[in-house]
Image (cartoon, rainbow, N blue to C red; front, side, top):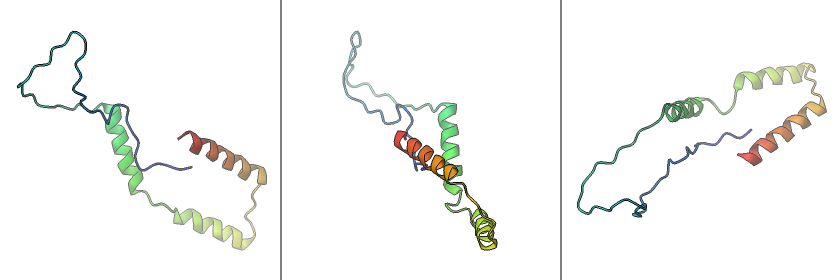
Length: 96
């Protein structure tokens, strides 16, 4: 499974277009301060992104465990299980 470095939040890349909606007036010379409000869900996504970025890419404990099992001849994998996981990840990657 592939986890992207960034997750785009709907509306995160909004830009002013200068267009005026029907019923609104465009007022020249008015200075206003831009303000951004971040939802709790967006804050949670940001926190999770930071947590994932701190995780190592390779889990050395798992690698060592599997290597020891292979060396001992005790590592057996069913082909159907591997094929199923490969297909599952391919489907997930194609939708992401």
